[in-house]
Image (cartoon, rainbow, N blue to C red; front, top):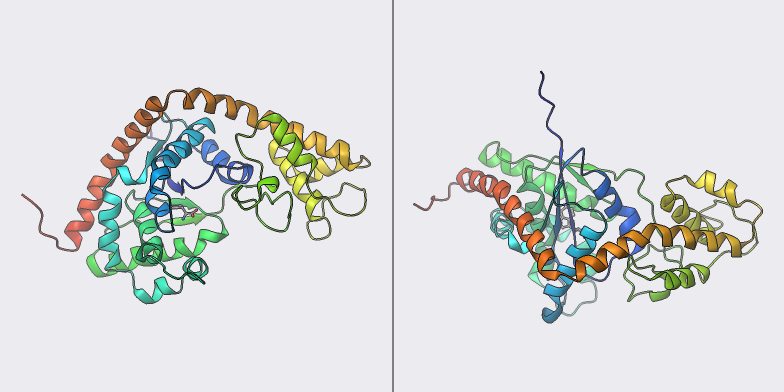
Amino acid sequence: MVPAPPMPRVFSGIKPSGEMHLGNYLGAVRQWAAQQDDHDALYCVVDLHAMTEPFDAAGLGAATRQTGTALLAAGLDPARCILFVQSHVAAHTELTWILNCVATFGELRRMTQFKEKGKGQESVSVGLFDYPVLMAADILLYDTDEVPVGDDQRQHLELTRDVAARFNHRFGDTLVVPKATVPPVAARVMDLQDPTSKMSKSIDSPQGTVLMLDPPDVVMKKIKAAVTDSGTDVRYDPAGKPGVSNLLEIYAAATDGDVAEAAAEFDGQGYGAFKGAVADAVIALLGPVRERYAALAADPGEVDRQLEQGAEKARAIAGPVLERARRAVGLLPPV
Ligand code: TRP
């Protein structure tokens, strides 16, 4: 029998900042869960990246565990993927140092995210500047083939590819140069109160953000209060009717349908009935996730154990890759 070809290895990271919201879930995490069976998948809670901007030391560990718990609740299954915490695998920081000596000041200075996050700040950490190199290390440590990235991370992935190729050119073929993949039909979920900007952390827009763990009555209230557009017809028109179009996207994603179908379904109905149906669909989607979260959160020791098992598997892959990189750059091996 011909052995099955190896599955492509995919890596993605999520920061442990803020609670996960419907945009994270529909736009990314649900896809992560869906691709576990046809990918060799690694998912990482990037706590070291969370330290690149002002952060609360007293809350960092809890936020990391909370994000790990939410990912498990959202369907990441430790039997089918490797889920771990970045700082639990020391090789990430060690490879970062080696790559720091390959990446250039000039290319990091040009990163849009750095320029934007650093803008108007009185003091910017070296960590924020180095953020893309740590991200490159995350990816390259696992011989990653594919990285699903949204638009905001595309430039960082290009940098990762450039640094890997330069490393290989300078030190011999060592690192796998990864490809960016466009997440399949990821819903782009916009803020309910301001449907021209992306749904983001709830502290920025509590009423416009549906949290993954919001109870049904809160989901209902937020969606009922969503900004809709003038007129009364339910029609998909992102430019002319951004509010209604966002709700149609959410409905289509939550019911695994498409927007055209959804628009046809609500044609001729008023906004009130439409919003109620959208809320019901979201409540049905998130119900099982909330239940799993509650069960997991009741036993944090078990969550920590699952994350540690993930870290163990991650270390087993990362160790030899780091070793290859150390050798390639000529570091003296310890005896
Ligand atoms: N920078 C990514 C974000 O803000 C998170 C991240 C860290 C990541 N390391 C990664 C994503 C590696 C993909 C691969 O969303």
